[in-house]
Length: 205
Image (cartoon, rainbow, N blue to C red; front, side):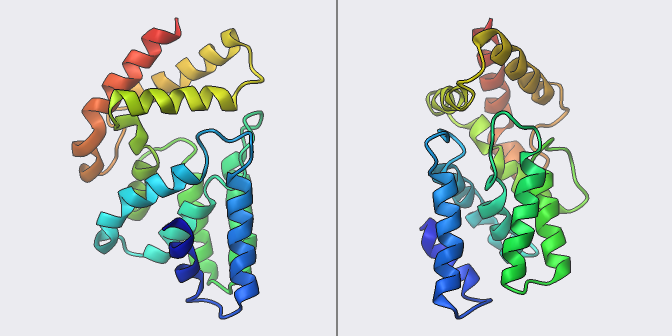
């Protein structure tokens, strides 16, 4: 479904099969890296499944999809500028499709918002970042797999450093008035997300 959705998306902007395949190969290759245990194609598909029921509520579905496919295209656990680099990469690729400057800027806005997941003036952005965080509110067994896979991505960090950084991230979310900015995701995942985060925090120390 992930590839089919992407090919259908870019087919609106180009008839060149080589371009379509090249764009998909770039996404598939980067997300299939051996260093990726959570930020993979499975993550993209999970976010897509969260967003599909909301398609009619989203003002610019195409831009949301582009943000979905490119928001983690650059991912290096040793760096803190992955969102910016991913947004810049998206701009390069969308320029190949002659996407309007306004839509490219909107796509970059969605991607950059995934760094801190703060409330944004654009509701499309909030729906996108909420979908990106939806794993936080899944059942504990699924959430446990998620944070163990995240740990694998930070394998180069010793436990005492990783735990400190992970705890900081967890507290960042727990201290928010609302983790999920839209009512749809708040009602669906907020309570379980806070339970999951609190439980993981207790397991860290």
